[in-house]
Image (cartoon, rainbow over all chains, first blue to last red; front, top):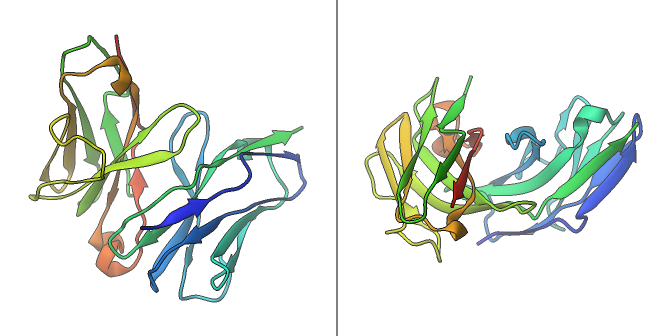
Length: 113
Length: 122
């Protein structure tokens, strides 16, 4: 079974600034994916970024990037140039070959104007 | 692409009655569908996984007879909460994955989420 730890229940960032959300996980799998999902007040889960565990290069998606440290089982999300629309709950989720996806407890991000 | 819908978005039912929630993949065939439960200000907890035409696999602690899951086609899965009680009130989210979109054997592992259903049992 996979376990996921998001140690920051809440984070706050000033608009246009950069913030990093942390995530560590534990898995016995060698092949897996890692995801960050965003859940705004509408509660619709929105994919932010994905990382393939076998790829050393960190994934980037516009203002979003990850710092993937496979040996340390760490998968942090960096949001650059934060916008008001980035305010949401952010969930880290590893997924294995059986599509078994487990979610961390989440980090609530507040963006201050 | 990869849109998942849920119906209803909000349902109120009386204690002791049953309620059915539908999850549909609108533009792809969902090889596997998942049902999650989310309490206020908490994370998503996987309830069960279902493959089309097969019995659902339930997570430990989830009552099979209480939460009936049917995945009768590649585009539809239903969750029926039987004899609902106030403690069943929660937000239920379904998701779907597809081999054709790269899930599972395709190595994508991504799940596409529905908008959720809020269940209130009075």
